[in-house]
Image 1 (cartoon, rainbow, N blue to C red):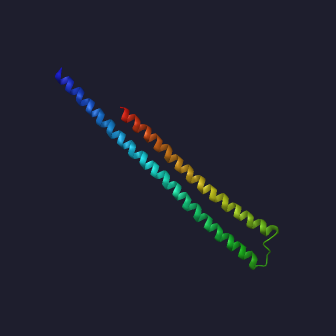
Image 2: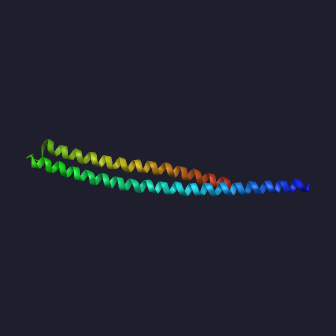
Image 3: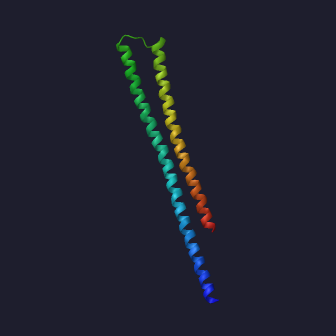
Length: 124
């Protein structure tokens, strides 16, 4: 009887140690996923700014090229071309931001899942 009791205590301690370990692993995973989400947002901001700077340089080159060749820039198809170019750059910048937000959201879902697992292991 004593032996069975000691064996049960040992199994209980082992189960508790396993749950504690798994809880810590889940907590670490949640922190990592949250950091990855923040990195995705920061990366998106940097990429968006880079894209907008590049678009601005391209817009300047297009404008100076048209002007150097004697085209008027304040009316007609040339103005439409410049406006469309600027509009496309804004659209691309928005897509970069949306993609970064989506990637960050996926990491936050993973962090939430890890937090839920941690809670389950703590309950055990």
